[in-house]
Length: 275
Image (tube, rainbow, N blue to C red; front, side, top):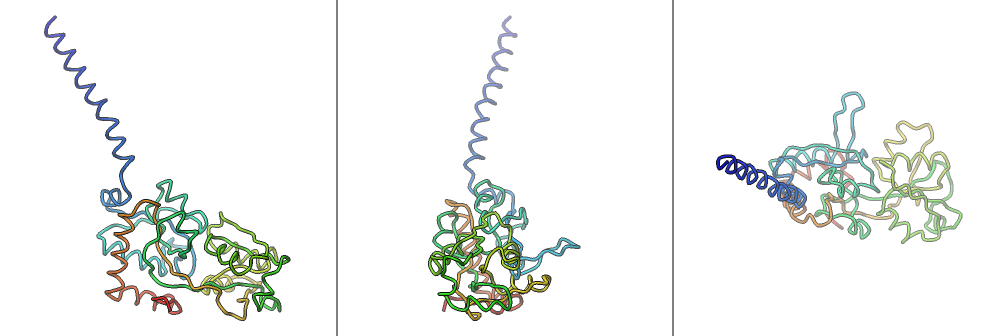
């Protein structure tokens, strides 16, 4: 009986030890920071939106190109990491993917705004982009702010940054906020189809839409932009270590002249600093 009792005690101790360790392992994964996960896997998982000139995908090969692709390729090389374009998301919903852990960063730069700062940590700016109002080509209306800021005017919006501009400049106009839109294509389509009178857009997006659409769009307000935005990568709220690592790498690329070369190649209209 003594050998059996000793064996039983030994097995009980082993099982008890394994059970005791299991919650600790689970807890450690649950509390792992985004940077710790990135360093453990040696991979930065990216959320993305397809938007010219930021990120394009060849429909035949599936290969990515654009200013965000080149920037993130250089940035992850600077960090010694692999790059994974993990999931397509939307301008108005990317924070959901961050919060759910589907990707580590929104790697197509987003416009900085107070509304965005409430839902994600934004890195130091990569460059500065201009936001315009779009209308149907040939529409004689909407060449002044007063003509847009009317209760009868319907504005298409796809993200929080544009909504903040709408509330600031055109508070009297109606808004159609398509928060789940994957990219700005739906915005241009709705303006072209007269589901909205005007919408927000940028130079690359308008050019891409007009290249394939029989109904052409143009910039409202005489072609004058409504806002200059700093563009940043975004990470989950609280993930300051990952943000700091990205900030440092962005600064290194700028100092080395890498960012300037990428911008000159894809979007020479972008600014590299605030005016």
